[in-house]
Image 1 (cartoon, rainbow, N blue to C red):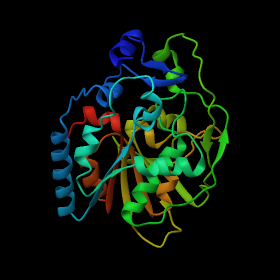
Image 2: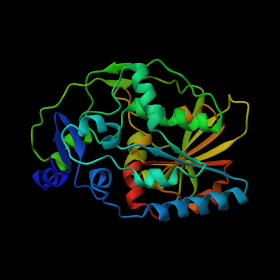
Image 3: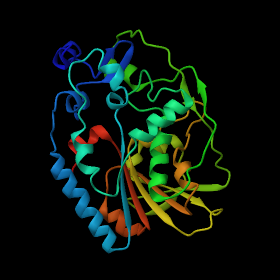
Length: 299
């Protein structure tokens, strides 16, 4: 079927069922459109220039910069989508910006881990890649830096509540979905201290996980690891694709993966902010973003 037919069929919603799997559709970044219908809002050349200039400016201050891409569900599941939707997969933004030496695409490592662990890369009823995919992005970043990533045994649970079944995206429709297991793994946080910086006041606070989630743009989440043999600090800008919750815990910290390597890790849910970089003055800045957001990326 044509993508236009699928969009029209679900025009009142942001979720589309393709053979038992829910996908994000009719969203502001037009995920499906940019990958299967060449709907480009921000030209790849513009994004390239933004990242090139930012890298140069930070390097002049002796600050490293990595831009990492979390592949979209519609990219990770191309083999599934291609059976039902016309159109060749397009990744024009990724194709252009990965010519920069400091841009990391998580796709290859995610696929390797999925094959190795015989696991899906996505959640059947959610717009996000699953935990294995987030681990894959972390894995790719660490390999790029030259650090051995932490390894964990992956287990599975049967169900996870997904955002694409929420009424705001799906309405009151009852969806018949495939039954996929969700990968999970546990990381101990006993050796890492955690607190927050309230950005408007720059005061140190300790807020609950729900407060941090509900007011995520107002806080920098700080992790201190006194058990590493370095004094490095990193600042990570991210979106929801980097902090997926473990269903067994209120705040499963994917952030602990990164924090296990550096003494100070600062996490901000949001796009790059030069004023915060200047104030924190880290050794390294990492920006991790969902691929679909590249289509609306602004400097």
